[in-house]
View 1 (cartoon, one colour):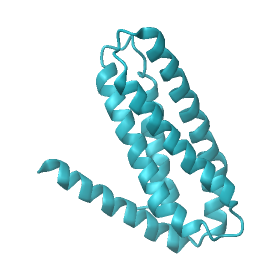
View 2 (view 1 turned 135 degrees about the horizontal axis):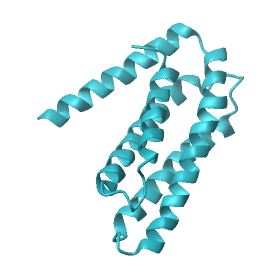
View 3 (view 1 turned 90 degrees about the vertical axis):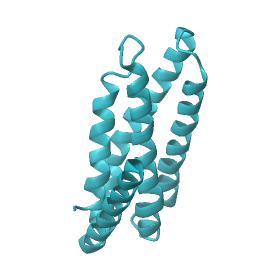
Length: 149
């Protein structure tokens, strides 16, 4: 169990790895598309439901910045829904969506890792960040157990 920011950064690394094969030429595209969508959804949930409520009152964090990150999570969810609705044989449309998703994800990870998480670590007590990280781990364990049923 670690700091909440480190737990969220783990999902960033997974997403970055998945982006390497996130293209139509990859024979595993369908599986990667599902996995990356689940990873983004899990990341968004942990950040929006666990981290953000605990840190939004901190003076050093601008609410507009936190809302921007939350909006990007929503935008990504919408783009993934569109992607799933388009048959892969419509390559032009699929590639446009892949480019948008990739661009938003890369910029989003950069903003969170380079700005949001360092700010959170400076203005939130470490003990609280460990507690939030523990909550994230607990929730992941609950979801894994549900998946095994």
